[in-house]
Length: 51
Image 1: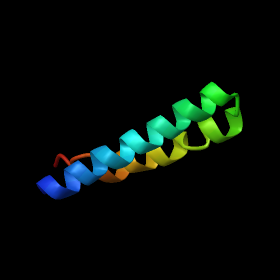
Image 2 (image 1 turned 60 degrees about the horizontal axis):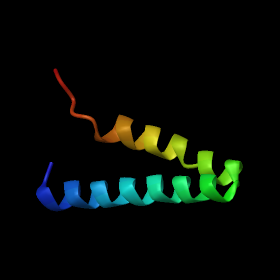
Image 3 (image 1 turned 90 degrees about the horizontal axis):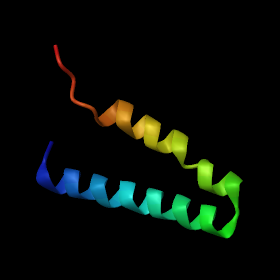
């Protein structure tokens, strides 16, 4: 993975986690947990393919 793509991915994940944490702090559970499937999809598409 290229360095710029990995930095962009880290920034995006931090933004999503920060959004979820902030919404949880405000008591908006639906908005807080709506970002969890996005992180799961991101993991499946960005993980290294072995073999």
